[in-house]
Length: 356
Image 1 (cartoon, rainbow, N blue to C red):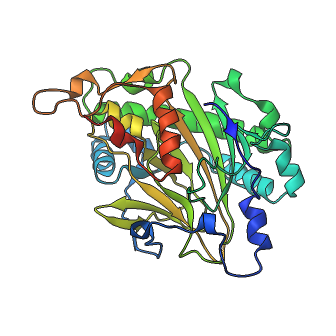
Image 2: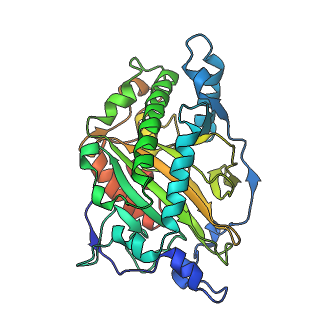
Image 3: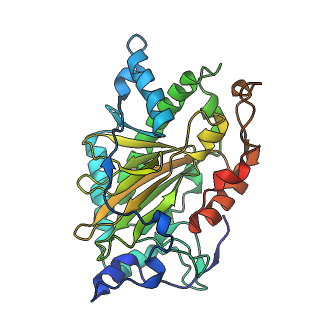
């Protein structure tokens, strides 16, 4: 993805500390009243899938049924017994939290704005790109890094402090990658595709994996501000480690925003647009958002997985017939991702643009 000029904005963490009044800076205030239902709603009964049972040859039917129901009803689910050690998760969480607690000068050594010409780059520490003066900004800072392909890692942007962050991220990436592979095989089986490696094969040899460590500071006016605006993920799938004590993630279902609960020792899996396209709409990519909190900070770590940008995706031929024609046109992943970000910053859903 190309870079573009950007003014160096104050990180939200610094802005939150500098606010002496409850008045919010105008760029962060949600302007669209239909989206401004930021109060707590109801807790979503998000299914928890026992991953170890899902993998068993003789005892997986119940879990597979739960998985299909979860994906078709919610587009997301939680996994327990997922194979990512508690120590690996805690190390990743602690290192990420420690990074954001460092002085600003240390964090800006890894800035996503080039120090010479202020050009925005997707990787690094900072805010999301501001592409329009009308863009509503999110109340979050992030550290965003490409982790796969490994030979494309920009290690200079991987923080050297805290000292264990690089190792923690590398181990977390490996463990979650194995989980992702197993889940994609299970999803192919649910769709009764001839090849259970169908989705894995579609990823290609240059499939992308990115990590986004998101920090949401305390917000004096949570009823006016998004932590992360409503969107669906433009990926194949996202593996999300939510904050272990502070909620805020919400999912849209049947016109109602539902709180996604915190369940210890689980990871949250979100279906992305690319799976929705390849499954011909059988699996849905959920619209979700993050709300802010007046009294507590929040941290999450997301690993998102995408098909090789140079490849094209389309509905699987096995899932297209007279009763269910193709619902999406073929699209090059690189073009989709570029269009995705343009729509995301405007609060729009890019998947609507390729529906037939």
